[in-house]
Image (cartoon, rainbow, N blue to C red; front, side, top):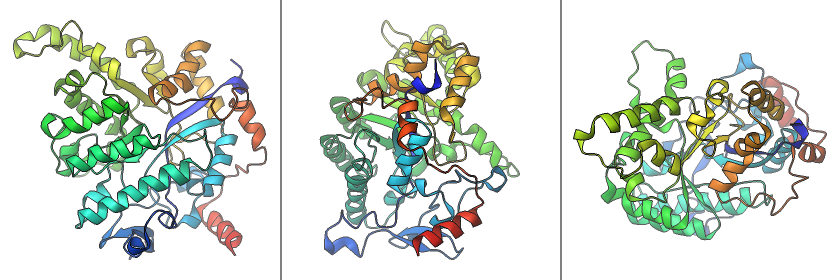
Length: 418
């Protein structure tokens, strides 16, 4: 395959929410009570709401920095590449990187809306959560039709509100919601509790809304040694996905709700062959435990419900048939340190070629599986020819990809804002 003929959909990127995000999405009576971007006692720009500060503003938004400067948090937006938070610059960066469409996970709000769950006034938190979704769907995604797959956050603390918000965002054309991997980690019922989660699962099933379980929320399940470095958590994060898969597969959700769909966001795919082999062996060998999947194996049911998402996984691509060709989807992770920018097409194609992936399967992994799973009409707003890497790069040939230190970014961005 020629790199210019590739089509790339990234179902896992991130947005660093701009400071004015609530301006157009709240009634005047609530604007003074909205989350605000302020400088905290550390001198770092963070969001605050009802006296609670967000854990992070930028969530490792270090794309465009030299690797030796990478860390968790730029101290301010001025230190970031503008594509992290500016929709127009994001699309230009997507063009340069050959990315047709992107799904953007939240930053300060958390992958599981925990920032709002922990607010004291839950009624006000729900108002702000809805405004967040309206900004994301109606402003961020709508600014460039055909370039963003909408993703909503959900009020996980309120069963009825969850169902109502799924219906509300689905009516706006949003068919993906980001949810906790392990809800019991944040004080909620586990996914084994179908009395609590059942109405939400049913709503998602009926409306064909995908649950996205992004790694990170379940970090609390890793009981690390006291002296363990942060490397342990980063490397082991994808293994938490097996816990979530186990809860949904063996807890009954996948069996009771056959139309429920789950995307394993940024979870990698290398864990899946071993996990599915283990599930099938256990099921066939330990029938005395009483589980009954009918005439199917656990691996069959997992594949029917799942989209497994990865940034880079060269070894797992060699056993792709054991994972399931229709299960695998690539992602970029912009603007985090794992992201591949500005040469994602070349990197992805080289990795695919190294694993012996033929052209038809490359298309499955880079765009077809994601488009099908998220009901994304890939060429509704852009022709197939223009949607290719070559077509997109021709739209923004002048994108500057120079690496700059955070101090250089700050100086340049502050000068541009004067």
